[in-house]
Length: 297
Image (cartoon, rainbow, N blue to C red; front, side, top):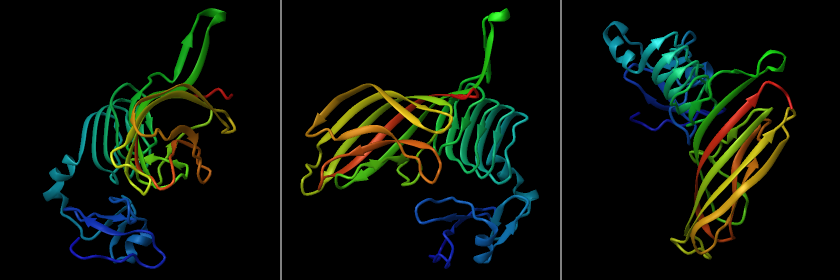
């Protein structure tokens, strides 16, 4: 947008950009490309479309630009649902679902789902994966019902399974224990579900970049492997099976996988801590192997 727009009193979002099709996206000052509700849209003088859930600065002749719209939603397969209120979506396969307000997503396979308001996420294969975290890259675990044995000795269990990778980061300037956030956005942790077992493999880099007690260029690199059990009540039990300092110059700092539940939403995160007056940039690559059981425990 050509001029700076101030956030209106009582609102969180303000306009950030207008697409060639007239769709207005918003920002909260940190995240961009956000969608607004009707109240926010109309407060800035735009028109809200109840059918599509979009905010428009102007209307467009879709007979002219229909081909452009289709290029923003590539659907190679059958029975895939891509709502009108999503943008920049590429789906290859069958029976896949985007719940809405999804930006910059990719799905390959069948019966996958990307939950509402998830952006910059991918499902790379398999079947029946559900992506519920920002910027998550996942592979589906297949059949929901798995049966073993035969006759009276057979047993069937229903579950969801997937392997996924996430990138977390944060900055610390003192010895406050800090939960890292997905993509360093300052608010997104790794959402989890009850009755699940999550194995994790974390590679963490700590880089000193300032502070009166810091040495610019000192670093540490660590690998932590373990698992967390989340029972039916949401209680979490962590077990660390492996923790190794791979390389360092200077100090290590401390890192653990921890409960980061916020606002009643159960989640986990990599919790990091170092010394006072040391400015650190932290980065973590986290791979999760997740089993969510329909049998409670």
